[in-house]
Image 1 (cartoon, rainbow, N blue to C red):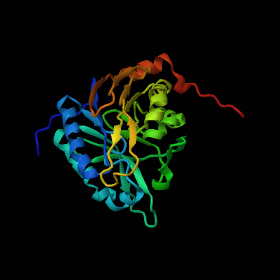
Image 2: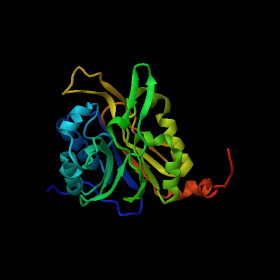
Image 3: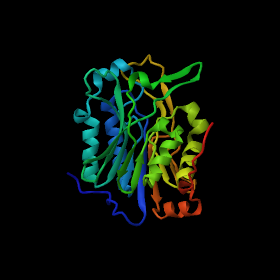
Image 4: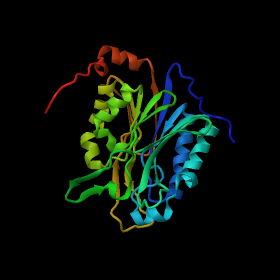
Amino acid sequence: MTDPVGAAFSGSGPLTAGLVQLCVSDDPARNLPVTRDLVRAAAAGGAQWVLTPEATNLLGASRELQDRILHIEAEDPTLAALRNEARDLGIWLLIGSLSLKTGVPGETRFANRSFLIAPDGGIRARYDKLHMFDVTVSDRESYRESAAFRPGDRAVLAQGPLPVGMTVCYDLRFPYLYRALAKAGAQVLTVPAAFNDTTGAAHWEVLLRARAIETGCFVLAPAQCGTHRAHFDPERRPRRSHGHSLAVGPWGEVLADGGTEPGVTIVTLDPGAVPGARSRIPSLTHDQDFTGP
């Protein structure tokens, strides 16, 4: 066990977060050392809370490959290793999501599951992605996430370094989820993602800023970037992700942008900005009943 690098957040004063941007392949064993190194770099840079993207363990794999190499939660090596890193470094860690077998008898689909890990390495909260990315972006680009992944059925508010509303990627397009999380007490909304190039260029930043403005929350969105290698299936059409991990303030301002390459983006959050923004525009208290349409 190494000496802790990060200083666990005490719940008062500024919070330093580190957004890890990855370009994972379809091979979890190759991806883990890269992820681990960037988590350590974020902690060394002063991050008390480190966040990784959606699909931290793999991306771009066929369903057949996933069935061969994925694990149930209790046996997943990426989860075990990153829990150890959180403990050894003394940091909070959001594992944006892992692709996992559910262990449910008769269920052939996987879970797209986000984890909030405490500085002692314990799992503080789990969230299974609610909304499945079933879209046709163009004649050449379509996705049917629901064919391989089972959607979750529960919104999750977790007590982390700040009260955290946990979401994943395509959830971003459903503002009622974020309003519900904010009204339940969330001060930070996490949106780990693997946004593709086309929709990312058009919608990523504006949607993240909108969710922050609507709720008066910080929004932290670590992302996948670049072209994802397919080691097991080199003939498979490569997938590309938009990158631009973003941290957005409660007033809607972009606090940090991770660009388009793998790496770490460090940002400092002032918890006092949340009540400040909400007092200026108290829209969370202005709901009105209505009829129609």
